[in-house]
Length: 255
Image (tube, rainbow, N blue to C red; front, side):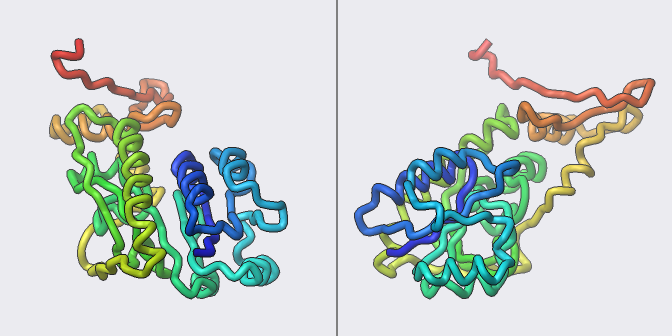
């Protein structure tokens, strides 16, 4: 299978390593984030050992020259892994076998941004899903998914780490089926599930000291937004300065 990989983050690195070592797979090109947004970029590039002519900048996928260069590589399938750019139909149409995405959520729940946060706050199922991509946000047919239990002691960080591991597991388990054409396709119902965008955290991050909160809801906000070094939830002191809150949750036997 001739693959074009779009990768960022630790999961992108681990998927790159897996594909590079798979005997029935040839990664013909890779798309990474520009330097300021790139995470584990050096590790991804080292794992694939591709010439510079086959490494592309994810911020330039609207350029016709870049699209033409990608087409010349004749990729059969695209694989998007924690990739932060919206992919347009013109790009998705390059791949005769489609473009798939690894999303750290149990679709149809938590399409879009911050699935680790909103699984905790909304009480929706958490997990990882491999799905075909369309021009809708995480709306394509589901190929495989696995649910991850959300523990009462989970924070946004600890749940995210679980989702990273399961994302790799789900992809590795289904990759051979994608190669031989036996992978299932489960259509999603647009009316089902939930979707969140980056700005949705703005509505929950400010803790109003004069407001009454349901205790469970407040704890869920604070633990969901605990993910150092990110700032998370806060309240304002008497001078209007933000005071940030991070929580630690321990069971009795952990003390």
